[in-house]
Image 1 (cartoon, rainbow, N blue to C red):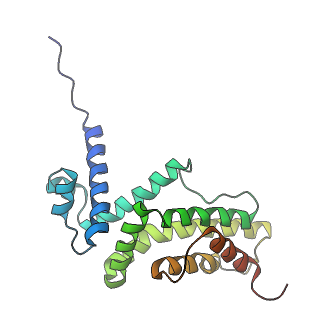
Image 2 (cartoon, rainbow, N blue to C red):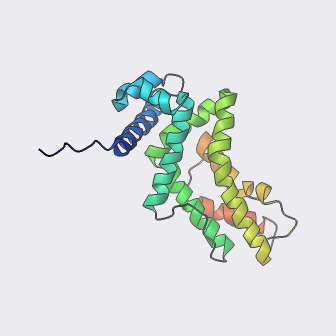
Image 3 (cartoon, rainbow, N blue to C red):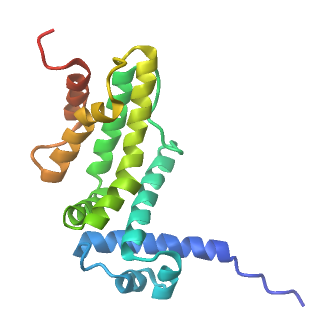
Length: 204
């Protein structure tokens, strides 16, 4: 008599994690961070809440990892895993490319809705804000630092420029416009940010 196949625990765990991530992102977008609970995530994902607690100590950890996974999925879909800012030797073109991709991400409801919910909570919740920055934002910003340092090595950026400050010339205005809805975000907008950041606004 043939033995029954042994269930693949790894595959089952992967499916459960995917369901939990999807449930967490959907819930935080629908009801906001404060009303999102481990119990709600578990019910929506079709798993026991102890399954979630076995992998994550809090809903904040679930959501942050779910959000990081969302970014990794986007990178895989674009064939850019691990994700890096392109280095073609043309700094302006590379920055325009990555900021246009950022615009696409920011206006994608699958990203925008949970991102706004987490960002809003980070303003009033110091712990969430700090984790949001440390686990999500800063690693992404360091990719810009790496690309700007490469440009410095080529002589395309002044040697005395601090890349961590310089990147804010184009990243921060985009983030502010998106968060506060002070104006539309578009390719034209981010292309202009790159132009202003690299060439300034004084007469040429």
